[in-house]
Image (cartoon, rainbow over all chains, first blue to last red; front, side, top):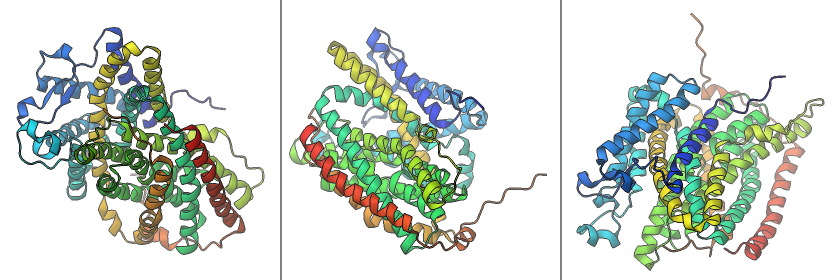
Length: 480
Length: 54
């Protein structure tokens, strides 16, 4: 029997290793070193020359553009190592990554232009009389829109960038790094963090049990799909898009074509949600920030889009709450809630796939002699989740054990955040690249898309809102 | 030259979906899932508001 390898060669594992590597380097300030201080921090700007600078004062003598170049080179090298191990075409990857990095950064820069980003309370400081008030996170939306334009209207460019168009890999690496930032935030309010964790867990249980059952019922009874289609559809629409559809397809031994087709729709609908749900949340939920965060985690169906939605919602809601109520919520709690909810969803994919495999083998197909291995749960667990939990707990533990190190811990996460944000922006851009809306017009896709539309916009988004409200209303993030 | 793998067409796949009668075990899966969801909702809300108030 082939031995199970500790290090599997897939994007999930390499998101874990690269994320942990960046995290470990970021701990430099906690031991008097500074390995990542060259990272290029981007500020809201009016004069382009002041837009970027090294994040650490120790590198103050370095110009912004040099810091940015070093940031790019560092990310190219670490991702290049992963690409080589994953047997990508490294030359094509390097070229594609270079284009994606610089286009993504340009979008991030545009999003931080004062007239786009500055919120009403900041206008006086910038001496401007108007602004769109979208916060710097508008850069994510710019990147997404640019990606959508390129992905849908410039197929030759999209094909050229294909080897480096890896949104799930980028967001998973970012999530591992994100854990550390959220761990430091949680150290400042451990009671609240525990509440977010448990309530996030509770929301997931509800979502799995209610969502999956309803979508499966709609697919089977209303749309007359077979079991082979209905189960992956139910998982893809109700749980977590691509990963869940694939895991479910494998669990029930569906043909590979089924989850592949479901997955192609998942990405498109997640992008649509990403474009309007955060703004809806800002309009109606700025007084209940964590409800908004949980809603993003429950309603948006890919890791990339859900965490991305959480990031945008975090910024938009903090800006609106400050403008309307004068309350200045601390950064990161809405994002933490969205990410926690999504991570719990990911953890349960393996368990749910195992449960479905049991039901299919023993109850539906009634195949005697066929066994379902508990190892399936480990196999299906997205490994980057381990990284998120590790970095979160490590930073939380460090901050609680040595409160005197909290300042250094904030410096550490400030530095790793530079790279985390860049991975986020590249995620947005590449999500846009892979979202081929022409797929919706492909002959035959109508029935599949209709199930998705009916379920997602008919009840998943709204049940998610209700569940989020039940578990999170009245739970407020700390103020800055 | 190796034959190219044909990507399955959505239209063909949709047309070939067989009719499968809804089995009692599927009904039980859905019903039990919803019942468990409803029961756990009450329990988890109570636990959340009692022990995890933040």
